[in-house]
Image 1: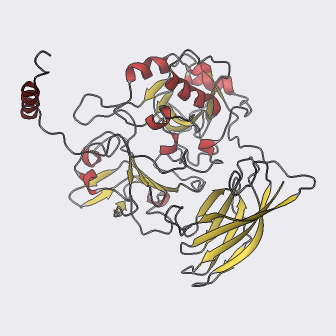
Image 2: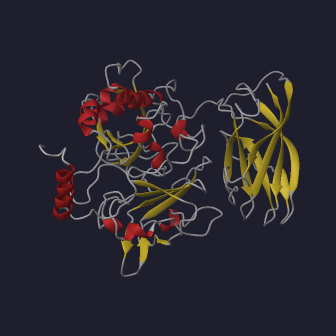
Image 3: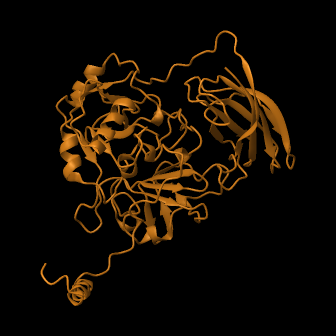
Length: 461
């Protein structure tokens, strides 16, 4: 535009713009604030983060793809604004501090028996900012207070306590002056907590939503994407691991929790580098059926920086026939240590101290904490087990800790017993995850959270 080099013209243009365009309503922060590290979300052995590139093919792979329709094109179910007052493409998520006040959520009109009323070891409630009652773009669909229709997912990450809160059909009831939702689920980011069998979450499959989103910060970040993506199909039939809930019984359809994998033979070298990263993750980690919806819709985060002129044609160049179905319910094989191992001593080194402001918070009541050992404290990648000292620091209630490989569930046997107010320690040898991730878990079997210190003094290889 001519004349804009003149400062007076620039000032006049800004003034006229302010007069003609009313200020935008406050909304959830965009772009979203950074998620707490380490990333990807959840421990290395979590189902979202599992490499499935070598997993066996399902015996009915061709049949399932045929049911969807081999010619069905992929679609990126994410992007920026849709041009309407509040409309958005994709899932909205917000990162909040640990000091965010908790709001009680009423689940009575939905699935109260399958919902979490709060995080383990924490008071009941969800850390919903007050602005979400009247401001747009805090909840899926963009409507202030959630509106009156749609899935209205709300995803909140407590970055300090490292907890993910997710709600379905979220809405603010101004008459009752309270939040309502049909279901809610809480996930501790440092654990592999799976919903009880038959339970839903904020998603129909009973899975967490946020770890399965295509996110802008990953696509345009320096590292490869290291997790699977959430996607939908029109019809489903039951569920398989890692899902916990069914939402359909259509014969011939995929179950909730089923995984698709982009065929290794599919050439992705001609795509722009960011798109290649997305498609490579589809080869390495795959897609997980999480909800009923449009066939082959891949879910991503709402972010105004997405360029749908790039995303839409790239995704549409792939079809369901470019994918194959991984064996239903597949889990990584468990390797058993056979033969002798050698023990190597280490200078005592601290792997975990939940009292530190820079570390993970106290292990919640009845909760787990998964810790990565290899690559730290001079523990090599090939270590099979570690020798450690575990300490429970002045717990407020009696209980015990259980230590276990990071890719397994906690055993019934205790490693360390403690009484209220006592600081107790015990030596133990703990096997690391058979998957090779080098992780071990800590279960707090007490009715209150407890601070835990773990010092390693050697390893077996």
